[in-house]
Amino acid sequence: MVVLGHVVFQSETVYTSRWISAIISWIWFFHMPAFVFISGYLTNTKKVISKQLVSCGHILFTYILMQTVLTVVYGPHDLFNYLLIPQYAMWYLPALVVWRLLGVKIITLIKNDYFLLLLSILISIGSSFVPIKVLGFQRICAFFPFFISGMILRKHGIKLDKFSKYRYLSIAFLLLMFVSFMVFNRTICSGMCNIPYKNIFQLFTRSSVLIIGSIMSFAWISMTPTTKWLSYIGSKSLFVYCYHVFFIVGILPNIWVKTGINTNELLIILYAVVSFVLLVILSKSALLNKILSPFK
Image 1: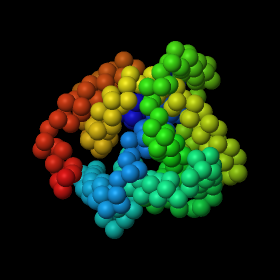
Image 2: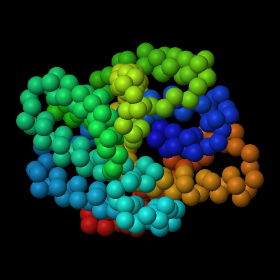
Image 3: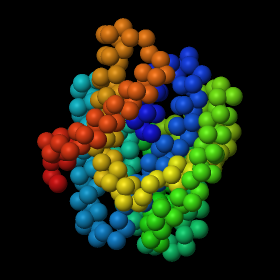
Image 4: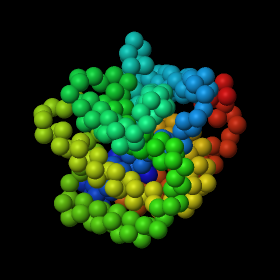
């Protein structure tokens, strides 16, 4: 979903095609909330702090590496601030570090799950009153409740397979949401962008996205075949997330421009699927994994 969402968003057809506009609105309501939830669910809260710090150190190295490559190759060539302003989708890496360290700490300090979840929601909604944009601060705070939700479920040993009984209801709900985006025919931002509130009404926008995004994420996750399958996908997620950027900002624009191919809905979805399959295959490459995380 993340790869498809980014491919679609980079396409000019998002502004001209009713189908693509609906797809991007539909995906953007839950693709990152669900991704962050799974990240929280797969976080081992019982890992000793020294191992957590080492793991986070690896992620920070990957962030510095990706930021350096993307800045040098694609620009903007602001070498003074390049680590403070995440390139493209790289905000997720420092966010993951903050979520893991902060989440593991507070989940051990706050035993009441309802209070913990409420606190994370207040952080999410209230963060945009703080005019900070560096290191994806707004997104870090905005998606925090989804990460905490995943950690809470893992803490109680709840298998996601348990929710598969709602699969058909979930499919119906997701289809209903897609149809509603088709009917309204407008591109809707997820409200989780890396900017503070411009006015008080945007607080209600983010609140509504939290609610709708939570329901749509639950619906999507309830269709997950097994928790074992989810763990396998999770083990490949960092590789796919980092390397998919080159398929989007490097390969994709060159294909459309240099070949003169007119993009359409089918080609865009086909490119996203092919990109994802190639990334999963490439994730087996020891060399590419070593480049991304040389100290593991």
